[in-house]
Length: 390
Image 1: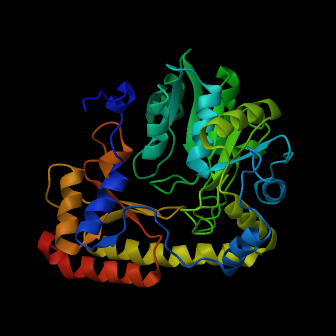
Image 2 (image 1 turned 90 degrees about the vertical axis):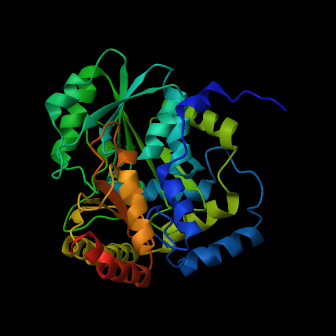
């Protein structure tokens, strides 16, 4: 049968994150490419899923999520994010943060609208925009420090610009936006009447005394921010697909309509289990997450540095960008394949996070694995480092 693919497919390619996971699996390697997050499931979530099915959470829910979960998200948003929101008017539970972002962009923007992304960017943010015929406009963070050049940011704004999209902390470089930076972004959003889309999926994973600040908690951004988050990373449930958006009542109504049409609802028993976890897990749980990830970050960064693969130390999230100029290869994909062939460790080419050539000597390492896996990966890097002169 002959067929013609959708024209949309000409603008899309499979994510390098997914590609390198496949390549890593072929050689039964250690996957430090995809943020799989295979850590043990908290017992309260295991019990919550069983309880949910017994209680009958097995059919469709409201398109914006079950009441219990929306109430717990609203409580958490107030206490942790300092965002006051109505669980019945401002929250839409969707199929992961990716689903929440897709519904938001579909509801608010038209084909041809321009959305600003900071480089390095998360590839699925770019794919979401491109799939909706929106135009990503790239503004580079200052290399190594990851600071914002606000002159460059303002010069990227034009009459077609509708929003700025950030992740905070940033996947892939681990930048945590300061309150000063967010207020400056807010001033520009106010001046040019822009939305701010804030992906906060790694909000609990911050290091070295840094504080996560939600833009919607700031007066200048309160009414023009759509907060996107979820529990895939916090609870190590990336396959459960529980994300949400928080926005003004009229915006949330539109986002909810799209969510209904595209996804119907997020998985019902998972919604209940997550709500129960939010209600019952104490601050100590979230502190232990940070401490665990910091230990793995420090171990991997120290190993990379010793072996000539110089890391940019992340302030948050669970990824490391590293300068791998020492590895052979004309671009980051060849360097990535070389490292996989020589060590059995899967990473992601830096070019996946840049619109130009800035990522050609960069790889991304994910440390969302058990400490024993990270230790094994470090041993393999050290054992093989003589091959590239260390």
